[in-house]
Length: 208
Image (cartoon, rainbow, N blue to C red; front, side):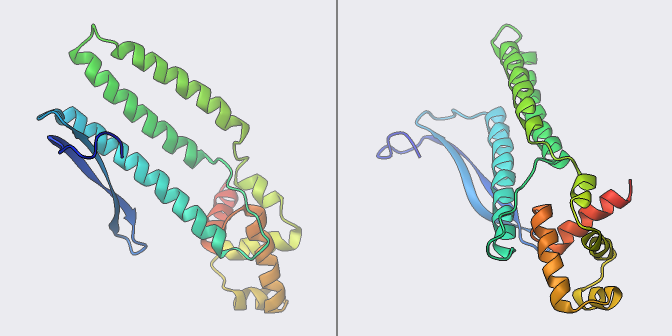
């Protein structure tokens, strides 16, 4: 919060932040608000901009929350990494393109303003940020799968087919304890916290 908190706001735009509740629905976990001492300061465009920013902020905070939960589910001592994936790049581009589209709408109504210069600056920033992301880009499901030992690859394939630990042990002729050890190694190498995430990634590799 910034500004003179002793003064009463004359206008405000407030948007809720939503997060998945884990049951297919959503729940409010915060609010984003902009306020002004001037009455009628925020038009429809300002409200739409706040709604877009709230959606972007909620997704960023939600992803951070999911990453921390996944980290907590890993065995102590494991330190997974969260590489940049194609999903991250698509989400990033979608949000930035939406922002540029908003600037372009303003430019259409006021072509003599600085909006066109703002579009150029935004495009230049995207280009720079994409170059930085490329340095950390994920090699994809194939590279993660190939990082596994032959035994771990076999377990990963069975994991992608939906087998639980008991059936994995029976299929491989190994003890449940050994299977759990292999699964911990797989989660660590994949940098993921759940068997569902790993199974989905393995299926993407096998589908190629």
